[in-house]
Length: 421
Image 1 (cartoon, rainbow, N blue to C red):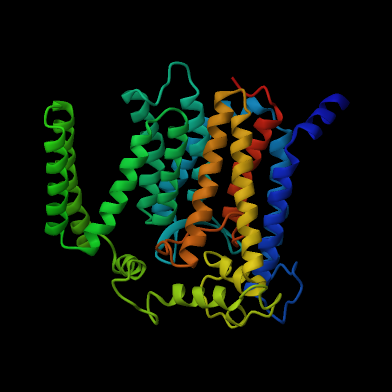
Image 2 (tube, rainbow, N blue to C red; image 1 turned 60 degrees about the vertical axis):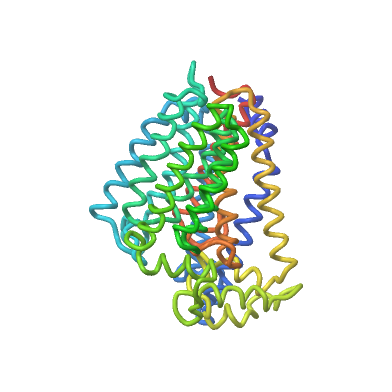
């Protein structure tokens, strides 16, 4: 028993644990600053959001320790059960969920606490995807295996999209990096990037002009490789897909997207400016971050923060508080911690002897990287405001607990360096 305890202590990646604790601490103090109430100055006052976040951190740490003490094989054995339970919760939230901010994504637990199943779906999807892809004779280069992997990812995506929570839905797209690491052709990533560019172009310009340019480019390629029938047929098929895609984008943009979603895209692309309406959050976010300058205004001294100019400042826009009160130096420190964390997770994934642990590790790194990139990107105007939390820093029990489970399961798998078969 003593040897096992010593082995457990030395095998846990304590560098990652330290980064986790640093980010949770930064989150707690910035939530305290974002919603500070002079009547409740204590950071552990449970009548406030910062007091509740302190409690969430303690609960998450206890859950993290329990995960580290569990048998590793228990996690992979119950992966299908965890996945099914999550899907049932996602169905339940569509029927009996609580609507907050236009999204029916929460289940009320009483006492002012809510559970958001979509947050835990990220963990269970990573777990079941790792179990499937690590199975015998499974290769993502084969159509059947690739299709089943897409179904595993797609089912929770579809249920979350019905809430509708587009931010959480898009997070699942990050798992394509897991498939890429396991052998998926890089052409899929290139094609994906091209379709994103085509999506933006189709919104900005007349579809007929876009199609005309594509036809000219395809014709040029066909003339250059006219003797290669494979290239010619591929380009003609690609042309047909692009034409359908361009007109589909315009149809979805005009008839499917809700007005507030269209406005957010318009603001990001510079089509319109709405500083007092839908663009208010983004504009105030930029002001808050810019006003911090190099070293920031100081703890609890941010005017944008103190007077609540930025809505959702303790959740989706928590990075504004970092920028205003801690300045460029503080922002760079937070980004540096996240970069170090993601690189550390990739290192942990690569040193695994078990395919299951390696695949799961890449899933964790992909989800966290996507969250950080999109959340910080939307606060500075690089991506549309889609409403996803900043891992370990944004206020919220479901978010913090789900990211803790996601991370500590990997730490547990890594502590058994031989991995799971």
